[in-house]
Length: 291
Length: 275
Image (tube, rainbow over all chains, first blue to last red; front, side, top):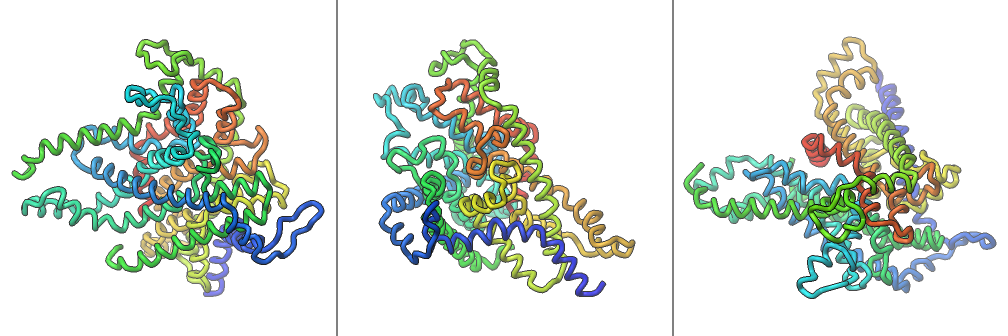
């Protein structure tokens, strides 16, 4: 077979997938960038070049800052908590636990449920009149708190749901990594009388680092990408206290029909994702020993 | 085991207890929903162990909204995406794994961008594209942005790369064409990965919400997630027990499949994730 024919075959093989990827990922990224410099087309006012006007408007939009802040709080709390829990779960399930199968099942189940369904169930949990949380807190004299309707608590309610939904999923990656750690290490350590606590911090935790990095990147992306539960539980409220970036983009684009401004907001989201990618690349480069 | 472990028994016992407590805590929301769905709405807030069991909530939910149609839409959607991704990602992954062509590495790097920037984020531009194609509110419109996947290409490329080239050469000597080699050698050897990939894909798209919400606006196209969200929205004023029944119903097939194939599910997610 000649080289050029080989090359033709290869191009034919990648062509359909690449066209679709380009049409729904790469080209939209470019058009988002372009649209962010134009005004939104209106029936009697066609779109025109406005330079950085949209960006200037964004900097003075309090809801944008609020959504960005909320998203940062959401990511910076839900990600570390779910990673820590995922690690603990994996250590539990990887040991000689009684009823291991059942416990693993319990941890993992939220992962297969749709976020929409999960949100409905939690909505009920948080209900101020007959929600389970309200009933549990009744003996302590805390009654009728509208958890989702109060600005100071609503975002935390969503964070709890995110942690509950994601920890079991991340556990799987740790479980896979733990199974690759040689049991000889544990044995050698126990002969030397190393406590389990020391063993974890000195041996297991560093060996899990590559997994932690991988999980962290995915968790942070999810923190910016997953907004389904917000639609069901709070609708971004009260007073935008649970609006995050993607939710704000949706609101601006599909409720206010402000295409240009939604594109500008999307550029911020893309910039954040690019930063995550660069961070991952830089951190990954250092662990040469891995793989 | 060794002497040292002897001291650990209390610790181990505590660990087991903690693991179980966390497990029960994790199952609590689901158990709560099950309890509510199978009891009359009068018992919503009271946990009476002797409350009568009923299936009425499921019947009410099923009759109150076109769930049969939503189910059909979701099944069609997920099947379509599964078939398309299997074909498109297999072809592309094969080329990236086994062909040497100019611009391959650059093209592959471009493909990987989609791992970071999933179509969920580009909702606005994708909506404009779909609108210009005249496909708004159709099933293909929900599927189109997801028909090719960087995750699938990446996963299958890794798999194909790990298959010894000798197998391919042997098949070539026997007269297999390029696609013949793919069909006879690579795909059969990649079977466990296809299972893993398939399970991850089905659970992702069965559960997907934002894009279908944006692109659909009628009963004949809405998938289950969007249908459920509309059904359960507070302004509908529907009983909690009925909402819980609907919630369980829509996640039911996936949940039952998960309980039946628990081991495969967990292993699949592991396999798909580790690469």
